[in-house]
Each structure stands twice: as C-alpha cells, then as structure tokens.
Image (tube, rainbow, N blue to C red; front, side, top):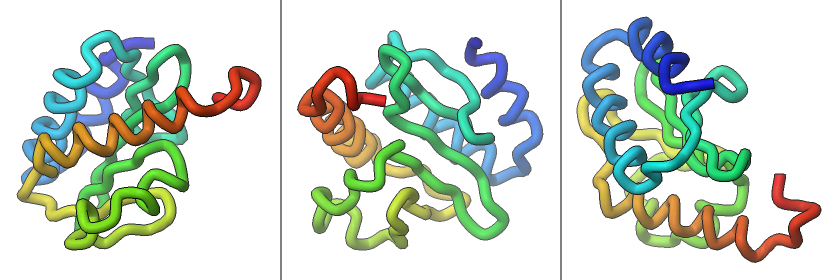
Length: 123
C-alpha cells in the first residue's frame, strides 16, 4: 500500500477540509518520514513497523485526528483541552489545521506507548 490510497481519499474531500487535512498530512509526513501511508478502517493512516500511529479524516462539521489508541488523550491534559475529544478522536475546525507542535506531541506519546508495550501486544 502507498500514499496513493490517501491521495484518492483526499480527492473526495471537499474544501476547506482538503486544504486543512493536507496540512495535517504534511506535518505527519515530516515527523514520520519513513511511515507507511495507507487506509485503515476507512481513514488515512500512518503506520510505523505495521502499527498505526496517526490518522485523520474529514467529517461534515469538523476534521478529526486519530492517535490510533484510546489512551493517548488521557495523558495529554491541557494540550488537548481546547478541542472536543472522544476516546479515539480529536475534533478540530475544518479550516484550521492542528498546530505542528501538538501533532508532534501526539505522535511522540503514541510512539512512547508502543515502545512500552511487550512485543506480543503491540498491535
């Protein structure tokens, strides 16, 4: 699988969502330059060694960021306080990308969690 799947997904996303998510994608790519880009559970996803680390999607009224773990946001505290957060997604405005510093913290938190898990339980 390649980034072409994400390109196909992005081609279906309306503006201003597309521009916003393109910026988020570029930030994730810069942080995880060797990650595999694919579609997982219907959303654009970045995987490292086959494990989901970050994902995003467009919804009607917002965009979403997915840390691919239900426990990332609980340790992020005030970093995510100004966003609507569910167990698995962070919602943000359709016309304002997430700050690169926040994406970097989300990814570092996820990578730390993966590294702390025993090998047999990493997926």
